[in-house]
Amino acid sequence: MQKLLIVLGLVLLAAGLLWPWLRRFPFGRLPGDIHVVREGFSFNFPIVTCLIISIVVSIVLWFLRR
Image (cartoon, rainbow, N blue to C red):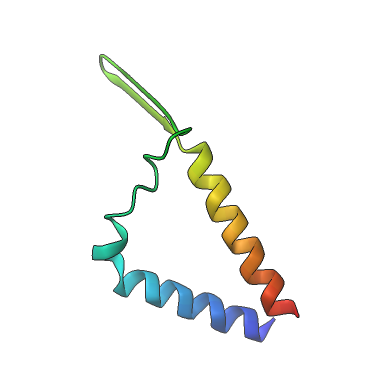
């Protein structure tokens, strides 16, 4: 558990430091993400982005538990 918290903290620190470069990646605008824009209404549902993040987090946690 302690190892997981340390790694999670390091990942958040790295994401914070790399934020200017991470914004250039198309997360939230990938093919398969749903964007609905109407007059006075905007709805975003990033399905593919959520799937990619879930897969990456699952793989990282799998490696940490080995």
